[in-house]
Length: 66
Length: 257
Image (cartoon, rainbow over all chains, first blue to last red; front, side, top):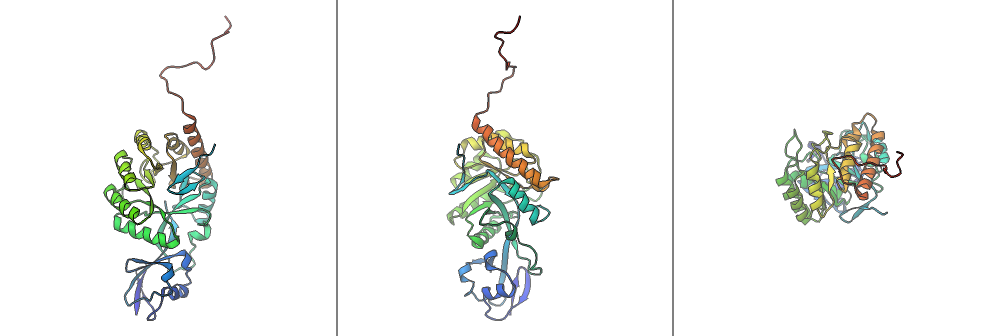
């Protein structure tokens, strides 16, 4: 299956969780926020939340801004 | 004399808030913040670079445990996008104190006040503490306060323009009527502009481009730190009445004849 991650098609195994995805991508959960289909997923749910096919996922962080 | 800067339930030592955009790199950003003495900085929310994971992160240079991050909605042109960004920001690290800006058009980056008011109401209901970028309109500022904004942030002049505060009277009117902190956001071009904002009685200033785009950003950060302190002390000391005619500073008594 695939998800649309930050605007790009991304192949992932079935039933992969947010925690597993972040680990695979070498991203520290403490430094990001995750939104799936425009709903923010609280950090405590990362290990339970399983992606579905074609989910639209945004992983964001803080950058410089005025 | 204790002069603490309080926004919502948060207390700050510095009345200068620094924006973290437009610097050469994060190292320069960190040095400028240090020189500015600011203990609150604005940050923006953007997608993680998934193709280059080695790209440095702001958090690696500016420790959010030491300096308060003020997530903003820079680049949002409607309330839906702004709400989305701030909900993500809150989850990212528990940031409840946020800066809302809903822009009206790309050329002026002037706030869209209709959307800004709508968004402030929703965010307050969702228990955010909202500092709001807004026009220098005393009525709009009052409406924001009534909707629960914890601070109003009228523009001095256009974002990134460095044109200072052409309409001082409006800023003064806003301050005189406000029960929440008034922070001049946008338009500060140099140290004296920041002093003027503080002498008008404002509670703080937010500065980004004036520091980041100075030839020597770290030196300018220090200059603006000092100008904010000077302006605040000048305001608190009670400025003298202006006069149209000269008044001698030296007594005429015992003058030689």
